[in-house]
Amino acid sequence: MEDIVMIPLTKLVESDDNVRRDNRKGAISELAASIRSVGLLQGLVVRAADKGKHAVIAGGRRLRALKMLAKAGDIEKNAPIPCRVVSADEAGEMSLAENIVRLDLSPADEILGIAKLAADGLGVETIAARFGVSPTHVARRLKLARVSPRLIEALRKEEATLDQVAALAFSDDHAAQEKAFFDGPDWARTPERLKAQVTQAHAPETDKLVRFVGIDAYEALGGAIVFDLFAEADETRYLSDRDLLTRMAEAKLQPIAEQVRAEGWAWVETAIDGVAWAQFPERVREHRRELSEAERIEQDRLFAKLDETEDEAEIAQIETALDAFALSHWNPEEVALAGAIVCLSHDGEPRIERGLVKAEDVKALKSLRRKLAKPDEGASGDCEYAVTATPKPRLSAKLVDELMAHKTLALRAELASQPELALRFTVFALAANAMSQLGPLSLIRIRVDEADVSRHITRMESTAPAAYAELFNAWRERLPSESVALWSLIAAAEIDALLDLLAVLAAPAIELRAGRGEHIADLLCQAAGLDMSKYWTATPESYFGHVRKDVLVDAIKEEKPTLDRAKLDKAPKAELITRAKRMFKGSAWLPEPLRADVLPADAAAIAAE
Image 1 (tube, helix red, strand yellow):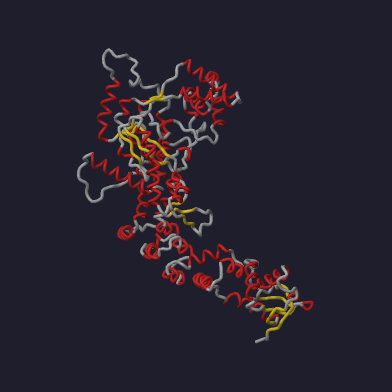
Image 2: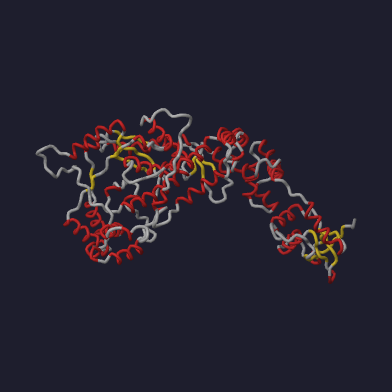
């Protein structure tokens, strides 16, 4: 074997004989930091080159690190470097041998090695500087060193990945870590699922409870906050005391509930974790006053004036006057039969759902509505709460069918990603069937008959099927086709996984139709948080070109109330469609059948244009 000789750094150059082509310049600064800290642990392999120089055939990254140190003044520019000189014939073989037989340090050994340095008294910054890595990298390795020894051993044997162990490291509870990883099936060991299992008692700062209560208020009562050290995209904080959060939220909702109770409702409740909307089969709504022609003229005048003025005091005065036109009221007799729930929206804002009628009060409400629809003899014919005649149909039955098809597909896509809600939908359907006295069922005869609602869509392609298909196909690849194997998988699955699968399988059962299930359709869409503006956009092709002119004018006025209705009524329909195309571009406006709080009219009663 050739002897090691010392060659000045200035006499060393890179060589094309080095077989490494990829990642030749990777992590040079880290390598330089290591050499600065502990010295050059392995010499270079070189061959003679022209002009008295030597070409490095093995150790190219070390050469670049040494030159980086020389440029920074950490070593002399002509510092002697230990080298082994080989012949030109051996150069290629030597380079290949060094790069092939070398074995990188395993993640488990790196974790334990860094933990030992920390135990010996070295700080995070010191360790990071010695090895040319970031302090965050060292802190993460030290966090991993605190996981269960069983997981470290699994990492060493390549039975667990670094991402899986990092997900479990969020919790310091070894028992919880081991239960999540070793007791679950292989398909449930994704980093996301593992993290979800060990963070069940935590609430991320994006949780609606946290947004409602406030982190400062939570900390003031002694609540603890932890960070996910391995989060790459964000620095989300987690609140570890969910019970404290819940108590604080309940206490903060109570004053709001008292204010609502003062409105005269039969009952008022608070809800934090969700509401079983199916228990309210009926709902009463506000009565909005119809404006007279004189009031409409005055409203348009105020809107025009509002556009012209820049005086803040005058703007406030005009807005107050405009608010008077939008006044609405509740029927006191209906209020006495209905109630309200004070809950939280997804963004943590208090939300009040008024007018909810429990099942036991539906009979009394229907009796009241019959009474209001047929006033006593001798009473004035313009009873304030009397049921008015059915208005002139606004949309064609074909267009309503298409809009409801869009809504159905969108609701399916939303439900497929909400397992808990899918469970409620399914249980509700089963309970509804049971109450209908359909007769005894044989062994598990529940099934989903998927209606092809897409056949109604001819004007605008729906994006919802693709959203659903992505979820369905992910499951289809994981489920065995043989029934015994399928049952074995399902029998061993965690509840969270079953809920995920149930959501995907239950979603196709939805079919929204005009004139069917008016009393529950809105509640289901509301529970799913369905926002149709994510799936449907008003365009000449999808809507404006298929409605009457007065319906088109109504939509334009609704989007921009300041426009002169008289001028719009006189404009040709083609001009209005062109105008709507520009005005509604990027708008979230929706026609009545697609809105969450408006039930579509009976399609059978809607005349074609």
